[in-house]
Image (cartoon, rainbow, N blue to C red; front, side, top):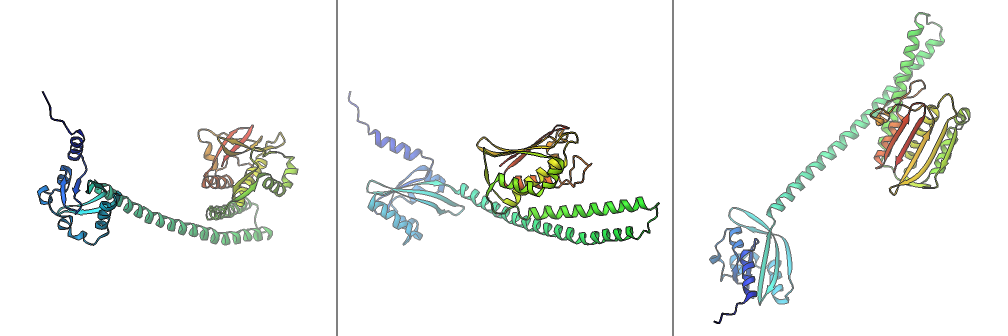
Length: 363
């Protein structure tokens, strides 16, 4: 029994053409519609017989003289396929957005499409949301700037009357008109006035720091900065007989803003001296190392230490003090924390009462 030979290639092509999810049309070399698949008719809600045998320009007269029409003709002439993005197709009820692939098929033109209407709508919504967020962000920046300026002016303007008040306290004290009974109250008033002045001064420092957090970086030598700070605190170092050990061999330099970096080391070294243990010489170790390919600065002392509890980071809060027997405001570590975090780094503190404290700064 003989069987008819089957053209497998043609049958497979026909199956893929009819079963494809995306609209697919075929035109001859004169851009006359030859065929279109089921996805084209269902997606666009059109009748196949209204297009077959009709020219592209009869169906879509708005294409006359357009670059898209010239592109289709060029594909037929050269055989080079092209892709077109965001091509619009309008029906009575809906507007479609397609990505089009046009290629030569036989002597004519094949056009396959991908409906990206939902995707484009989502992109438009995302753009609108992004624009809205950018507007909100700009508004927040403006408000933050206003708040910073207000805080600075308020702190600055309040310092003048407080400074005058302190001068009046000094004049009153030197006049010898304060009675023995009033002296304790006078001393408390004087102390509170000084405390207010110091806190306002500290707030001005914090505001000034925050307005310069984006300052330019440059290559900094660890040893040079430490030597500068040792010179500034030379009197206290000699008086307390502080020993400072240094080892920057693992990482001698870093790119950082010099003023900010100096502030970090200045606060940590001065605190290590200030909160020294009464029964031993202060020993401060400053070194660098590499951890997970990142530079780390370690500053360790043998001072009073403190109880970290469940929240070691509490020490970095503004006006937070772990020891009150020496003068201080609890601003230095807050400034350090702010600088390091703003530069994308991290700082970890480990401490134990009467044994000392270690700070690890990850750059």
